Length: 136
Picture (tube, rainbow, N blue to C red):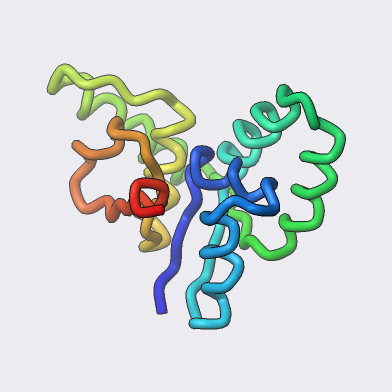
């Protein structure tokens, strides 16, 4: 059993009925795996799917899927840790966007495996990363 946090690039494909990632994620709770998203990830996902040609259908499908995902809401502790991550990475010449820093802080705090294609997360110590899109 594993606990996963979806980055936007892994959440957005879920609205496409025939997408193999959707099928893989929707069958995994039967295996005991849990999937989550965080508020910053929801913001990015909703923005992205609303820009697509099928915005109305996309948003309706998102509403159907949303109850299947645990939602993590960042708090002051997450915000402070996210800022510390950004400062530490910047001192090593790496940039990390604020949304990504919050996503990483939440994943680390709750011991979640982050499903992402984003290489900006790689230099973060102890952050568990998997890219399921590369294996489809």
